[in-house]
Image 1 (cartoon, one colour):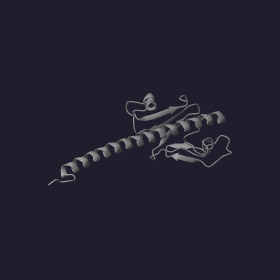
Image 2 (cartoon, rainbow, N blue to C red):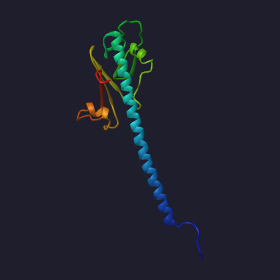
Image 3 (cartoon, one colour):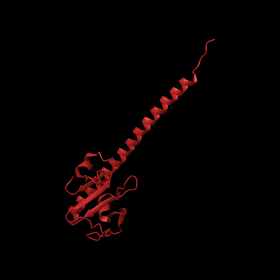
Amino acid sequence: MKRTGFNLVELLIAMAIISLILVLSLAGLNQARVRARDRQRINDLRSIQAALIQYRLEYGRFPNPADSSECPDQTVANANRVTPTLATNSCLTRILADQLPTDPQGGAYTYQATSAQFKLEAKLERSDWPEAKRDASPEQPDLLTLTESQL
C-alpha cells in the first residue's frame, strides 16, 4: 500500500527551515530600523546645525543654552524646549519653521554654545557611521558631535 502525504520528520524539517528564515529576516529588519533611527538623528542635528548658523547670521551670536527665552531683538517670545538638555528659543524655532526635531526614541540632543561657537551631540545606536567616527572618543564611539565648522 502506497502512502501519500508527509511524514513527521519531513514536516519538522520544513518547520525548522521556515523558522530559521523568519529569525534571519527579523534580525535584518531590526538592523534596518536601527540604521533608519540613526540616520534621522544625523539629519536632525544637521537641520539644527543649519538653523544655528542662520541664527548667528541674523543675530550675530548663537543662542544661549542657559536661557531658552532669550531672543536678541525681543520681538518673539515663548520659548520651547526640544529635550531636557537642548534649550532653544522662539527665534530658532522660527528659523526651523516651528518644527523642532526630536530624537526618534525620546533621547536627548545636547547643545552647548558660546557666542562664537557651538557643539551639538546625539547618541547613536550604532558606532559604525562615518559621521560618528570622525569625532568619536574612545569612551563614546557612538556619540555624534557637530560644530559650526562642520557643514
